[in-house]
Image 1: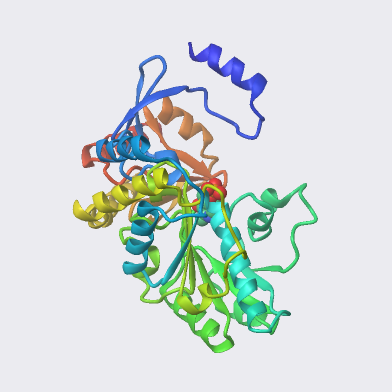
Image 2: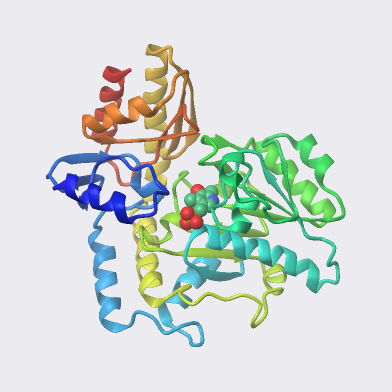
Length: 392
Ligand SMILES: *Cc1c(COP(=O)(O)O)cnc(C)c1O
């Protein structure tokens, strides 16, 4: 059965992905089943998307109810779920206003446009440069890839957009040197996800905030991967005691439905007036209705707090593995965004795990990443550790 699907796929789909030979048909919590009925424990969660796991009844129900009432009307009109979701985000973050779109890259597009527009409105239209980080990942649209500090993602799409510069992550001197009167914003992930699960140093982020304040530069946090509880706080910036001026969200916000959001403080958001930016689908009732339930479930059931302590447990277990296997060079990350750097390529380990019924993910060739649904059980973590121990 799966063979047939895969053969057809390889003929008709754009070959942009190197897929594993599994066809999934069903999921429940942290378990996925393929078309042949084999079960897998999911430590990928659709790349940090399905924080509440698969087929969550509360989300399915909210979706079904909203589907019966109203899918979409466009942003020419108001709808209730969009306002409710934005209100929650504003009440529970640094931000005062929210712009909804449909993906992470689009949220970053909005952030980049807003930063430039903000200085344009102030009459400083030569202030357009955005400083981003080496090894960052901000998405695949032209502006988002222009802001992405990885050669392989930009390759073949040149010329990329003008006005982006890169500095070494966690190097405050490099940033100090790079900021000049043409800089409008610093764009960064508090924890680099695709770049290899690398956390910003506490002191570094503090210093970044200070330098932005001193120079009037906007600070943009890309929390597309780190937001919505993934790191054990609802937003990763809460770990650091500082706030950005703009933040982008996507991935887990609707547990798998396509959504993106760009949040900003009032004075910055004011640069987006009527007609300055838009999205046909952005913030549609069907998607925002699901997102509201995601947020309610995460907060009411204290899943974010659980993620922090479970993440500590998971990390301890990975460190235990590191003590036993020399090919593990480093264990890092926070909450349930964890990485393990190897001295060998990780692909064979990913495949071996898959054969034993565990889905994990490898980034940057030699870093295994663990980003399970936040509702994963301790025994499922223990089972993966045992499996990894055997494979390694
Ligand atoms: C996934 C991701 C993006 C891109 O999101 P898409 O929805 O794929 O466009 C951007 N930034 C970060 C940090 C991400 O993890």
